[in-house]
Length: 100
Image (cartoon, rainbow, N blue to C red; front, side):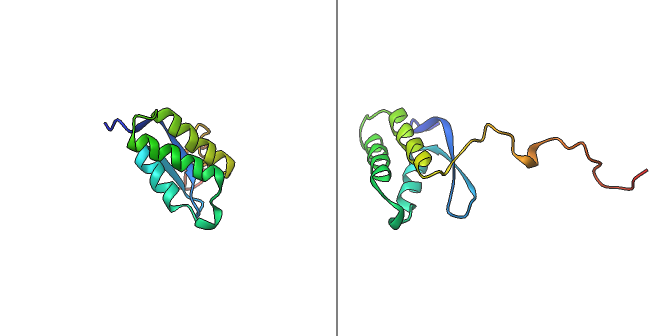
């Protein structure tokens, strides 16, 4: 296991409304580097600096993760995976076949 792996992953929506798991510092950096230039601002810059600092020094990984979560919240892309996804719920409806 990498020492740069987050205690718990962060889930974010990407530009295509797909949910992406950010499990480590490298994932966070890649996501931040790929963030559209025209949508960047001071919150993005702060998260990027925190992640870069954690990558290059002994800056706490938890602080970099918190900065990334703050970025995701501010851009409304943070996903709560704790809620059960609709396709993961048990169905009470019959599952095909003929009705009796």
